[in-house]
Image (cartoon, rainbow, N blue to C red; front, side, top):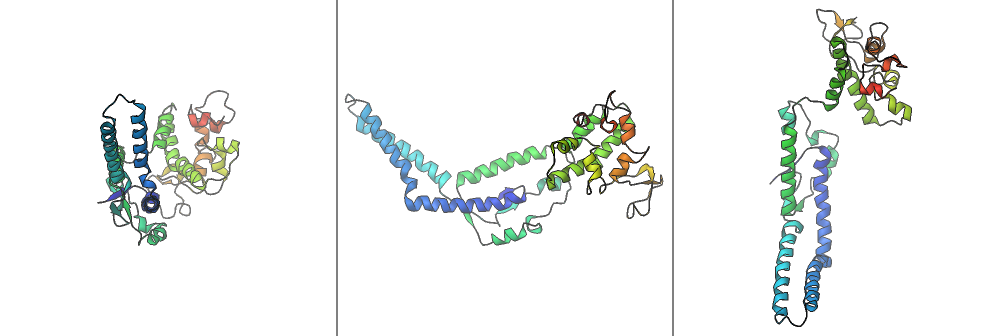
Length: 297
């Protein structure tokens, strides 16, 4: 029997959680606390029988039958949902790579990641899982996996939002360039920001919600690091800047995101500003009705 997990932390915590659960269950059994529900059932039915009055001649029989029924139900619940039964260790927990294989994305196995030392410490650990919870884990992963498999490969919800927003720009060429800039520059920079989680002021938090963010332009490691992933004809190929990248017949190069946005008359900022709404205080923020730009005003 196998338990499937979909991320590295879950792969580790699934075994740890059941090891802890087994320890708690051992305490409940050793202390006799697990029997308290049975005592409660007997007391409840005894009190119920006393409250029914003396006119019930078969109170004892009825009470014993009710106790028996409830005790059997409690026994079944404890057997399937309480008593650890199915053995689990790192050999029976599998990291599910079905989705990554479906989308042809290479994902390292848990032992090939920085978590490998943690997993090694668990190699001699094993646990037992109650039948009910083993079934629920398998069922939930099956439902979740089916739902994830229905999502088209390569779909980035952030990119979809930006693509939809970009269609509000009248110039289709400019709209496509905004979409390309979002995919190559803004998306990765925003993801890196969330990964690093720096301390930002309220103004900076508002600033990073639009693609021409001053924070991304001026802070090292963002727009000065990322570059266009496809050649841009407005920037000729530079052997120093574009070393190692393909040189195409059009002569286009691969500008950094900072160049792509703010490089004189060729940058994206000025043509994007030309599509903006009247009265925009900052031309960099006027992107033809893009919600990410509107929040920057």
